[in-house]
Amino acid sequence: MQILGHYFSVSLHLISLIEQRYEKGSLLFTSNESLVRFDKLFGGQKRTGKMIGRIFHHCHTITIQGDSYRIRDKMKVLD
Image 1 (cartoon, rainbow, N blue to C red):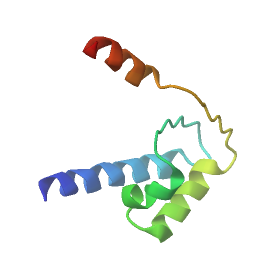
Image 2: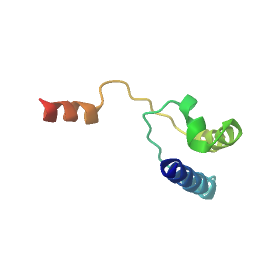
Image 3: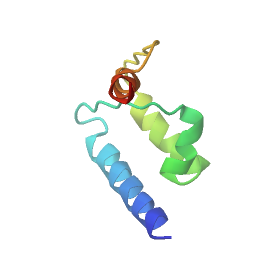
Image 4: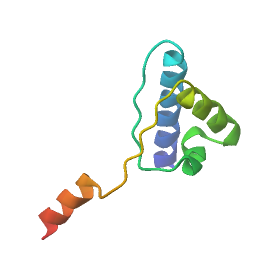
């Protein structure tokens, strides 16, 4: 349960940051998760819809295809 409490606390801080920066300045997000899984992060569909609306309003999206440098480097270490 403590992990879930920590996860919830982090998501509240992220929501607060998004709200503070919305229409006032830039934010840069990187994620290896699809938007479908963001419900868990923001705590439900209604809140997720609101946050995704804030994130994607006036945004530029860059999708990178290909191998992950992080995974590639880990594999080198394991070899």
